[in-house]
Amino acid sequence: MTSNNAFEQIAAVNLSTVANIATALTVLTAVVFGLIEMRRARKEREERAAIIAVQAILTPAWITSMTLVQAISEEQLPRK
Image (cartoon, rainbow, N blue to C red; front, side, top):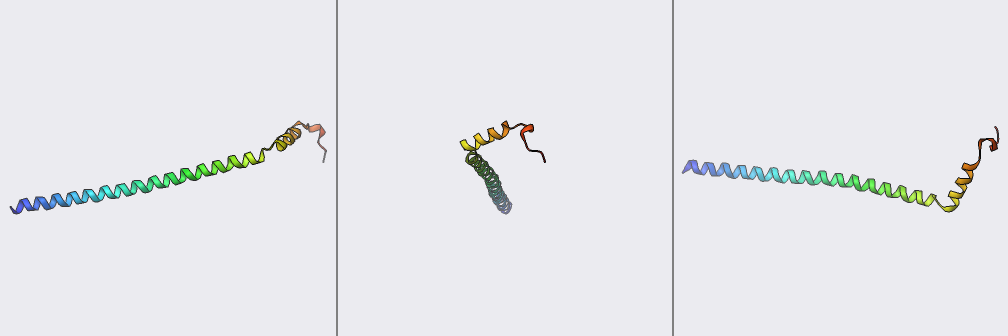
């Protein structure tokens, strides 16, 4: 009966070890996933801010003035 008790203790230790490893892997996976999501969210916020900045700049008056500036040829520019 003593050897049977030893096998039960080994099985319990192995099950405990497996449970601890599974818990550690779960936590590690959650941390990695969280970091990846934080980077993705930051990049999305940066892109959204850039789009809003461009939309703020591209007013009808600015577009009209840019068209006029591009229409000026090199000969019309003053010489230095």
